[in-house]
Length: 469
Image (cartoon, rainbow, N blue to C red; front, side, top):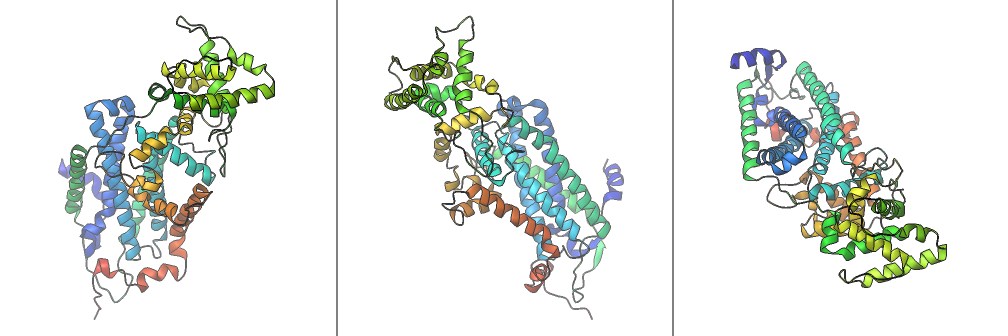
C-alpha cells in the first residue's frame, strides 16, 4: 500500500531541496494542506448529515469539534508559512506569484472561518452573523453578502470558497514544484542540496491528524443554545412587546439602520406586525378569538395612529409582563395578540414568509434582526464575554477551545484607532482591505520589499551566514 501511494504521489513530489527544507519550518505549507484535507473530509460528512446531526448526535458533535480544531490548525500554519516566506524573502523574483497566491489564500481562509462560525447552529452563529453583517454592510459588500442569510452563507462556505482555496492551493504548489524551494538569494550563503525527506514530511502530517483528533476529544467545540423569540416571549413578554412597539412605530435599530450600504430597507411595520397578524387571522382549527385590529388601525387618522403608538409605548414600558391587557387602544391590542402568538411559538415561523422585498434575503434575516432590536443577543453575548469590547473573538463562548484569535487586530483597532468612530465598520473594512492589498503588492514595491533583507531576518531561519570560499 505504501509503495502504491508513493508511486502515485512521487510525480507530484519535490525530489531535491536545500538542506534546511527538511526542517519543521519548511513543512508548514504541507501541514496547511493537511489541515485543509481534514476540513474537506469532515465538512463533506457534516454537510451530508445536516445541522441536526452535528448538533445532537455524539459522532456529529465530535466531527464538529474536529472541524473546529482543523480550522485552528489551518489558520495557524498558513500564517506561519507566510511568515517564514517573509523572513527569508522567498517572495523575490521569480516567486512573486507564489506570494500573491499565498496572501489570497489567507484572505479566503479568514472568510471561510468566519462563515463557518455563522453556520455552527448555536448562539455563536447568531451573534457572529450580526457582527459580520455590520462589517460587510459598512464595507459596501452587504448587497452581495448577507451573513444573516443562512442559506446563502451555507452555499458560499461549502462550495464557493473551498473550490477557490483548492484551486489556489494547487496552482501555488505547482509553482513551488516548478521553481523549487527558494534557496538563499545571497551569494555568500551556501546551502547543500539534498533529497527531500518525504517520510518525515508525511510523519509530521500524521502527527497533525492525531493531534487534531485528540484535541477534538479532549476540548470539544462548545455549544450554547441559540435564542428564539418564543423563549424570550415566555421568559419576559415585556421585551417582545416593547420591541414590537418599536418595529410598529419605526423607532427600532433595524428601522433606522444607517451604514455605508443599508440593506435593511424593508418596512418593519409590515414585516413584524401586519404580516404575522394576517397569519393569526387565518382560519385554523385552533384559531383564537381575534378580531382584525389591523384593519381598524389602518382606517384611523394619521394623528390617531401616532397617538395610539405613543400610548402603546408608554403602556408596555410600564407593563409588568403578567397583568392582563385590557384597553381600547388598537395598537396595544395588536401587540398583545402578537406577544401571545410569540409565546405559542407561531410568531417566529411567520416571519419566514413576511414581507415582499427580495432584499435582504428573508432566510433568517427577519428573526435575527428582531432579536437584535430586542437587545437580548447583546446581553447574552456580554454575559459570555463575546462582545467586541471584551475581545470576544479571542475565545469560544464557553469551554476551553480557542476562538477566532486571528481577528485580534480588528479588536485592537476598535479599541484604539476606531474608538468612538461612528463609521467604525466601514473604516475597519477599509483598513483591513488596504492591509491585504499592501501584502499582495509587497514583492513589487521597491525598497519596501528589501526590509527583511536589511534587517537580516533570514538568520532566524538559515542561521549565521556561511561565506563561500
